[in-house]
Image (cartoon, rainbow, N blue to C red; front, side, top):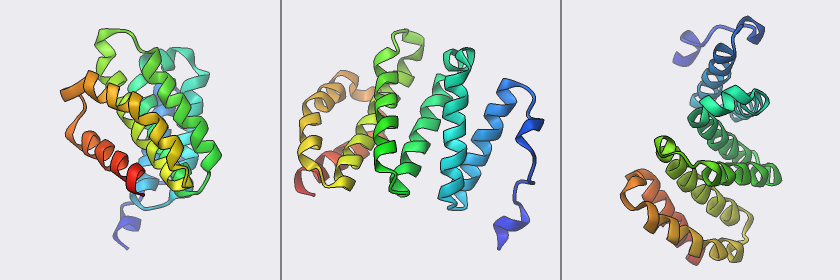
Length: 170
């Protein structure tokens, strides 16, 4: 198989000496695992990334975008592995990230956190068959779509509309 030829060499995470290199180690292995459809390791490394950022306050302040990406990847892995309750916990963290951000220079992260948390929460309710809770979210989601209008990228906008439609007709 082609990916085995170019696989990332197995290294020890303890060799990542700085906070940034440790975070990059987790991110690289998370993305690599996702790319080769190894959901278990994608889950593991996304979870390590989220936990590491949460444990190092300076990283949390400086790496909100990486935190958003790690949460997004962790939620997706949780849902794919049917870790439903764990996914709900991380969806709330992603939603809180959107609500906490106040600085204009991180507005893009706030918009992305809103879009991704809305998409994943609607998907969560669809996956669990709890469409009525998904419908309860639609007022706030619609308000957020209106507020952020063109700031939500086209792919996320389409995912939002798809999940909204699926919530009604799922």
